[in-house]
View 1 (spheres, helix red, strand yellow):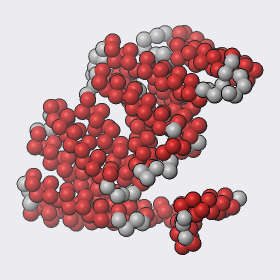
View 2 (cartoon, helix red, strand yellow):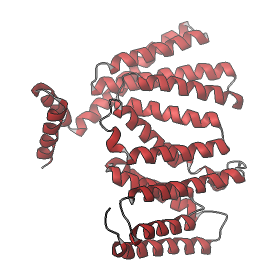
View 3 (tube, one colour):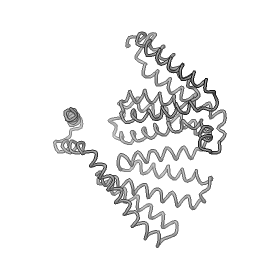
View 4 (tube, helix red, strand yellow):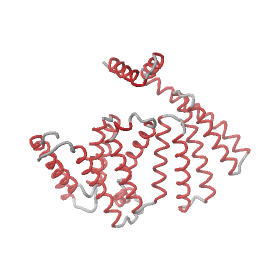
Length: 353
């Protein structure tokens, strides 16, 4: 059954993209590579890369100890990675990924060492990583390397902003952009730069889900004995308000073709959920991403998203600002609202426009 579906898909691609018979057979052969063979090739590539990096960097750094020489070694590793990416093979792509990450790490280490490695050096180092990853992101590379560069680029921008209101707005805007792009997936999936857009969307989705935990620094400080940082009233207000607006916007967009009591009932139930879970913005964002990812039919993220939902339920349960009784009542109220919505909303659905 899977083979029939694949042949049908390749037939449609051949008709739309004007592929010849040889290109179709190449796609079919590449898609039928067993997973265990891909895993073995990936492991072999990383072992080979490790041996090559050690044999190259060992003598080089022993002979050339100055920062300029180390920077040149990093640039050479990145150039070697770009050359490997041009081969467009699983083995060479993994080798290129290892060489690129090592080269970038070496350049960042040289810069951090020159700046002294203190807190004041975080921002220039983050800006350097953002620029370097941004350049490599637009150059021809592999699927995984492009995703890593996108994640490094967006993460370094967050580090450059620093903790505060700027980071809060950055997280909200990043989440809103990711939700919008997932909802408009059919518009950019055939774009010439669709692979780069997909990498940015995946990186923005993951990073926004992680950054949504920033308002709960006191919880993590209590659990891991980390000195707490004062978040401020503005930061504590931006995250929940922004995530609530994103969830309401997603629900309103998905139900835009409905009229009548059903549409307004969906918005009303969504508002109730946002009010009940307002103290856990990460949970609200997880719900919003669950809706857009289901709409986009992305299986990999739908399998990963329950981990974030579970994590933010854990955050809600161990919230130190409210009592255990209040937490239990919130969870019960959320369940009751969802059950009521599941029973009532199908009866109130309006006709499509």
